[in-house]
Image 1 (cartoon, one colour):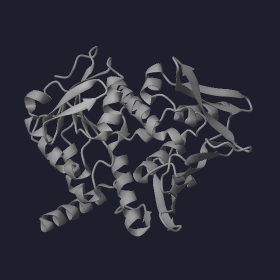
Image 2 (cartoon, helix red, strand yellow):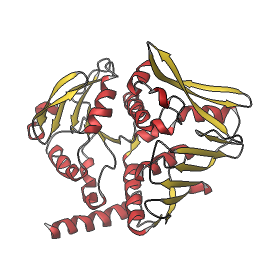
Image 3 (cartoon, helix red, strand yellow):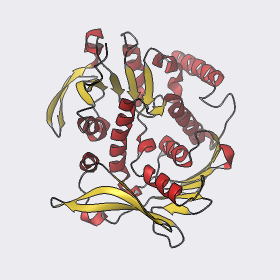
Image 4 (cartoon, one colour):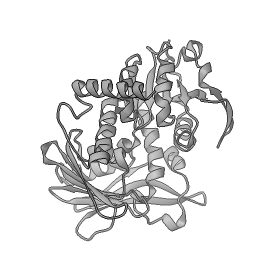
Length: 361
């Protein structure tokens, strides 16, 4: 039986790394009226030092049906190599009344044979916080109020890593169907990835990621919005205010021809973001991406609680798949045998990777 609607949803966390300490736990703890973390499990028993004190971490072998009973949400955030074993353990338990939230990239390509292990859960979502960044709504507001039209292209300059870049591109362009990706080397660690999406939309990603110098430019037919000042473009600017002797991020704004388009962060989100260093007060929005992803994680949790859900499982698997092929070959094209969206492709790749793992073992 799940938690009554009026009570915080019961959560179990599987994993105890930096992602848990720096993003997941702070986000869950910032929403006490929505969620209650009932236990943290990892490979070994230990004590976890958090901002709120010491928390006991239990060995995952002790996670049984008695502990699962009444759990509304399980969040998996373990090493990529450990995901199949964790899914194997959960598959022995009754999780039919439990939702699953799993961190990116969900599965490694070589582990696609484990895709079917998500079936027992009530719902499965992915913690892709690039899809819920707090400044996305500001761009939507400016586009609507300035009558800029739909996005047609996007430039991500050192502002997105691997599969996260694909997720951000799909979110900003409002199109989940990537048709092709081509990577070009530019010397050293530098390269570009050109994404073509359905309807002719495109995204150019400059790698490697470096948030400190990174920025984006979203191109509509009516104008371009960027977080780097440009005389010919509209500028997404962060709002930083002094409160209680600290500099806090409180919102975003875009100055357009028809007026100022502004959105605000909730006080708990400003606290979750953390104090802004004076030296970074005027930095680009992308320069603060790590902190914004923490806020995005909290917004993702709010979406789950409201019934909206989070980043779809098949989208995240597809992002991982595309990124893997591009890293290996330099290009990827959508077809029935190359996309996680295709049951046929999931079937043959899962069978092949499963057979390969058995041969190696």
